[in-house]
Length: 428
Ligand code: MN
Image 1: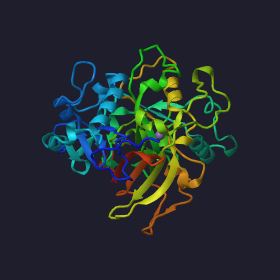
Image 2: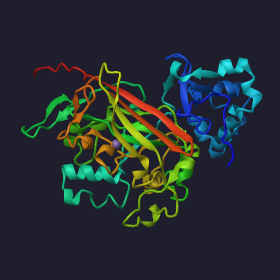
Image 3: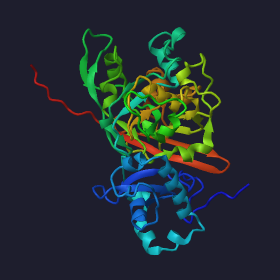
Image 4: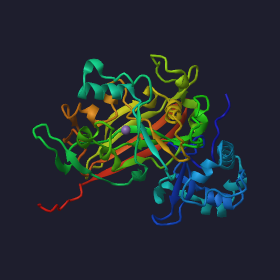
């Protein structure tokens, strides 16, 4: 067995960011300061703009990529550059490479404590799509709102169901989320009322970032789909269940989802996730030919958890533990299906997995399922109960892979719920 690669930067054993990970993000030293691209290692951010300016990176394209506010240009420069940068950074950060290790002046300019910087959206997101690819989640929702005997609609097992979401309201971890208001139809009333959402929920998801576009009218084949994916993030698809239940017929969710969707700041590349490949659950019926992905490890073993921290509490309660590997449809199948009618995807597009629920009640990826639509409230350690989120609650999602002493993590995506906007409507 070969000795695992080590960095001259000290990395704690439980860190999400060893030298084998190297996820990309965008940071600034002050909230309004100059944004540039960085890579996470241990507790640090390595400023790629500084490293690039010092002439330590050799990438193709004859230009610079990192002294800018998004990763889009670098991602668009192609897979050859993705691999080259990863290889060069692993060399540069290796314990036995002197170049950066022994250059105190450059180290001073290029390393920043993650806790001391502001992290921003890592990509400009032209489009956001959300899928519905967890069989357990779709079954739970079908049982609750339709018919337990026919919980899954007939199309669900034939295609990755999805809808086009709203890219403009995708926010980075740490951004507060204002409780939405809208139309709510109470069972006792003939007409809807206008009210702050009373059933504010999270959806535990991951998202993938598109790394390579396709031409309009030219679908991405299932064989090529993985080449179009740059990396993954954690994703909280905040959901207003009461608004959703009234508005979603017949075109799907609208304002119940558009008020905010949060992503983690670090994009973990597929190269870093490679050791954790596994296979999606058996697909029965066998998918139509264009979605067929057989004899391929087309999923990843990623541990996921959700915590809720009420206002003024220091302790967060873990309310869900699950795993990405339960997802029925793969990311490649989602992307291929998305383009099969000719839709062109773009570099930076965000594709949400859909709520990731596991087989057991403690592995459900939403409060809707965890509390079975408020019929089984959760007991928190501070004595309070939760059916849905309250103002002041902070919701935190984490994710990591672990095997043979190697841990590749995503960090976290968090957000705090703020009270609804006050409306002063004219009485007429
Ligand atoms: Mn969702």
